[in-house]
Length: 359
Image 1: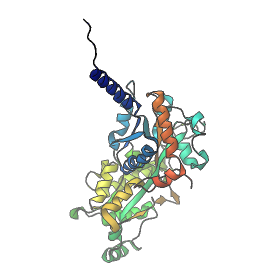
Image 2 (image 1 turned 90 degrees about the horizontal axis):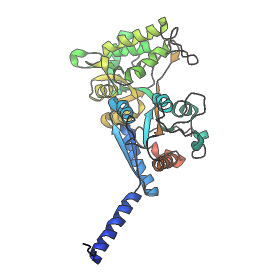
Image 3 (image 1 turned 90 degrees about the vertical axis):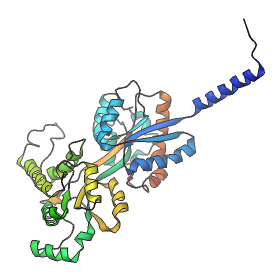
Image 4 (image 1 turned 180 degrees about the vertical axis):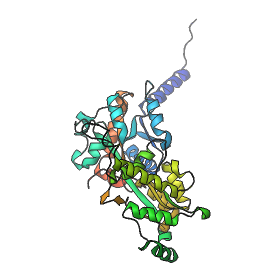
């Protein structure tokens, strides 16, 4: 038995079809990044992209300690929930060789100004293998390790007098690791719940690696030969062992738990007001200033025997191979937009945001 469809029903069906079509036409991008100030800044900045293009952007933040695991677990699925991943610099080899990152070599030269990007950022955030010219990411965040210190403690007249009497020099930000050790020892007063230094020593993710590198390199060690990738004869040397031993000695001047402190642990040890000096990445520093004001200052990582070495950080924007071609095209559009000089100039106004642009 057939029934005629009335005008009202037809109108309803048409309206539902129009709504469904409109929903299908709505475009969006999802970006995954670690949980910190730069990611919050990227979310806010992306509103400009949405205003220009109509493409909504969501920046999903994941705590640093579980970020890598969650990203690569997601890659185990048939498709990824993200279109763009702001991958840490050391992921690029895995992303490229395992078919996870979309190769951008043929596209990127015509989409962004490669000459405007700092050579180190291009080498370590974009290219794999090194020197191959194959591009898998565009720079998002560049950073490096540095120290925050309690300037109010350093400038206290009584502390200065006592330090001068004990060590025979002025109390000031250290230039060498030996000077750093003296200052850490001086301020380490566990009975008063005051501690000398917080270093990156966490076993989760890469914090202990980043924290150890300045000692390894400054004392004359190395992870290996960058040309042959041989480790023996480079990492197993007296110089490397000396750097490790020096770092271990400094850990006794940390707060309880300081021998296994990740980025968040070091940050907390400093911002809770108990620690004189703390090693961390630059993007954490604006939050420290916001929390502690003029009580804090900053200094460059010290050196040893004339050699100063600093761990560089940074992340690049890579496009997932496990998303539809339309989403890959939208992701390229966002990356090209983000790399514009005017956008980069606004990007660096956000807390902890750093550009790879040479200008």
